[in-house]
View 1 (cartoon, rainbow, N blue to C red):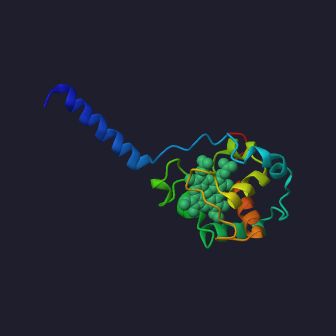
View 2 (cartoon, rainbow, N blue to C red):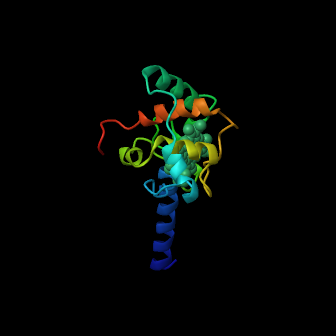
View 3 (cartoon, helix red, strand yellow):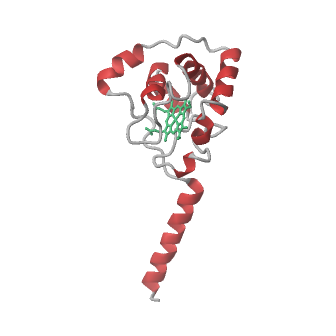
Length: 150
Ligand code: HEC
């Protein structure tokens, strides 16, 4: 085998390994996902469930339970759940505070209800959870961003 084909082989192996270990990349998390003609309505939606320690705890139980969110988004919210590892684009990393700053609760709700076209994020209302449960999970997902700015 010539030097060049060896090099190509090594590069391919390294690429495969890094994909297997790190998984795919997220699609730009700061770009909106809501359909443009529904954006104003989505942004105007108010979370009817106050963010309290109780609703966050309920959201956590749903996130790790019947909502099945953790399978893809990971228990720590980093987007590294066991099922998420094989998805491209990769699931949202909820520890990213910039993402939270960019999104209104209603935009998150819209994606949980309608899915994100062309990704593994499918509609989960009413398939897995009801609307009130989704709002509690949103309160929990917000809590993955620790410490505000970055
Ligand atoms: C089968 C895997 C899978 C499951 C299960 C899953 N998600 Fe996702 N989720 C994804 C992927 C992949 C993305 C990234 C989509 C994209 O980049 O557009 C995503 C993105 C999101 C986003 C970001 C939307 C945005 O505005 O960018 C939210 C919020 C979300 N998921 C909430 C949930 C909730 C809540 C649950 C559980 C009820 C859940 N997901 C379950 C795969 C999953």
